[in-house]
Image 1 (cartoon, helix red, strand yellow):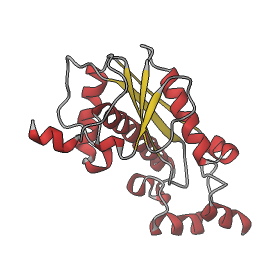
Image 2 (cartoon, rainbow, N blue to C red):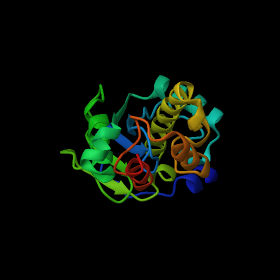
Image 3 (cartoon, rainbow, N blue to C red):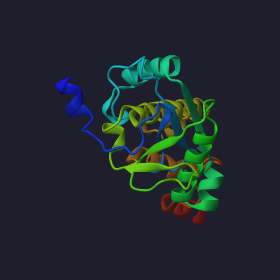
Length: 205
């Protein structure tokens, strides 16, 4: 039990029911693809061991937990905002759009939200924003895992179509490999045109 307390420091949550949805996103920083959000209502009678910030887990562990979350959660949804929406709205507003879509997609309507970060996504439901929430509450951690696994799968699929860009390795983040491929081969339709490295390459065309 002591280990669990260390993993999830206590939060003062202004809600005592069971329809609390953890919400998180993945994909704010990449130069390509959607920003992906997830919302999860965990079942308190079916706890899942090992939930934590998805970035702290290996890909194999994330994928195993993804299966357990989908099996045991009372409800979950994965949603996204496209690269075009990121360009149209900006990444901040697109992230919140993806979060609202995930919340609204829950088969069991949530009553309260715990959202990773320092801002709520503008949903009508009451809730709390929790800084580093994916390491502080299991429902947010579960959402971070579902979102990460889903977005990584998108990048692997994109890698199969465009292997010269290395998406399976860098997942679309602006690594040296990605920037070099962008310079050599140019932006794809899926690249976010509002992001500076992509803008620079488009200006050279």
